[in-house]
Structure formats: C-alpha cells, structure tokens
Length: 144
Image (cartoon, rainbow, N blue to C red; front, side, top):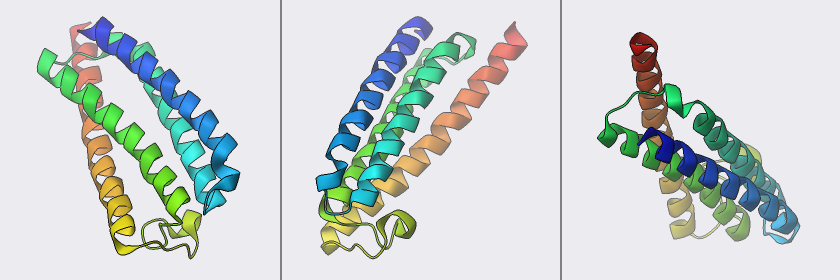
C-alpha cells in the first residue's frame, strides 16, 4: 500500500500544482483577483506538500486502513483548500472567513456558507491527516 499511496500522492500533487498555475493565469478576471492569487498559492503549496509527502511515504508506517484514510484526508484537505479559495475568488466571497485575502468582498449567504463549510472541514481533515502522518513516521522510526 505504501508504494501505491506514494505514487498517488505524487500524481495528485503534480495535478494540484498544475491547477495552481492555471488558476494564476485566470485570477485577473475573477471577481476578487487577490483571492484568486490566494487560490493559486493554496494549490501550489498543497501540491508541493503532497509531492513532499510522497517522497517520504516509505517511512510512514500505518495499517492499510489508516494509510488510505490518511491519503484521502490529505487529498480532500488540499483540493478543498484550492476549491474554497477559487470559489471565493469567482464569487467575490470570503469577507467573514478570510478577511485578509478577501477584503470586503461578500457574496450571497449560501456562497459564503459553502466557502466557510469547506474551510472548516478542510482544516479538520488536514489536522487529522498530519496527526496520522506523524503517528506513522513515529511508528516507522521505532520499526527501523
């Protein structure tokens, strides 16, 4: 499972970096270009994180079930971060959830709510995923 997980993390990390580059090309035409830049950066950093984790995944020791759970938590958190900031940029949303990047840009209530829900869920997913990565790295350290 470790080799498959590493390869899948690398593939999705590269895909997310590509999405980040494409987002930057389009960000000037968005309702909030500054939030578009945030989306670009979220994808670039998230993709880089996935690529870095793929490179060290052979040190992570988790059960097959926890391995897949950690993989999906990482994928969800990083892609949802890109998607939440991209939607906020397109809709001009985010004043309440990301005031530094969004400024005073405010969208319809349901749009603001969706962005906020994504931000909260991706934050929880990322915390859980990184806790599991640390657990797996510690287990690998003890094993070898």
